[in-house]
Image 1 (tube, rainbow, N blue to C red):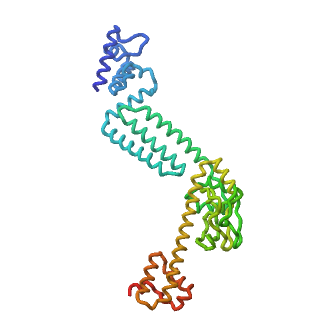
Image 2 (image 1 turned 60 degrees about the horizontal axis):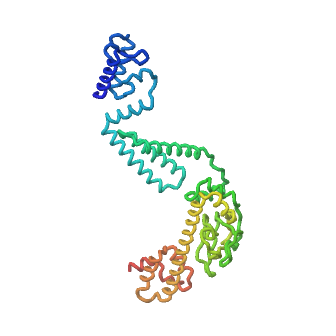
Image 3 (image 1 turned 120 degrees about the vertical axis):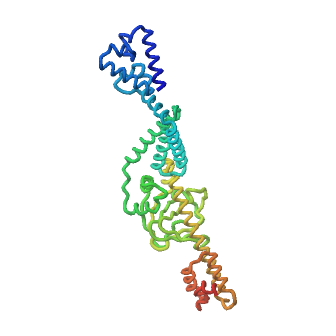
Length: 374
């Protein structure tokens, strides 16, 4: 109100100095003589100018608003500033909420790998920062403008991504992608599928041979059905099932020779792709490196778990071989139960091993948990 009164007073003083209620080529002035000499419409325009001036729109108080049918950018910013100043406490609280939420979303971006979610988080982050700036009495335009541009770019990119039609996959490709969906998108998976083909392997087929040199003619195999054995030094150390990858070590390490022999245990269905084609794909599409690394890492972890399970099985089997021969001694049953728990052996596997061992034909440890309680 004080600002409006001051603006009206200054306007009246400037008109009086000019010697009249206004110039012939200027806009009407809200002065007493203009109010008395003007018609009803002009009086209403003068009153409107006073009202707008009271709201803090300086350009309208000077008479510019009477010549314009709409708001200019300066008018909108003046109105924004006036609203923020009138509701300073509430605007400050909402602005702080927007600011903290925006930067928190920016922090969450570091944990997002999906490109669509990344775009959404980027839009939300910078949009909230722009909102924070607009709720301040004085806007930091460098920050607000560049964040606005960043939002616009991501909106366009998101629209392009959502407008891409998902590639069509065969039922076999869809089944394989369902196993790898957490590591690779449908579009990326389709690019990989275009490089190879599905094939059958007969029982005993060699998929990799220990000690043989790898070359550019090697193939990367992804199992879709069946099992294969992994042997080192002639001893089976792991079994691989659907979703496992064979031949990935040559892509992630510089080891010149295969470190294990992998063979089919029965009929095996797999997807086969030349290693040379995968290398070329990575050169043409560097963004494929991350999803392939995730697939290979998951496969290697599955191999390590399988090897650990077989090691525990083998160690517990050795314990049973000895324990069944001396089961009459005191404390043997408790020791067997302790070994079973330490190696993480289930009761089902315990019974299976007991059936395999000739030393345990008399079933001395039929119920190891009962022996432990005794």
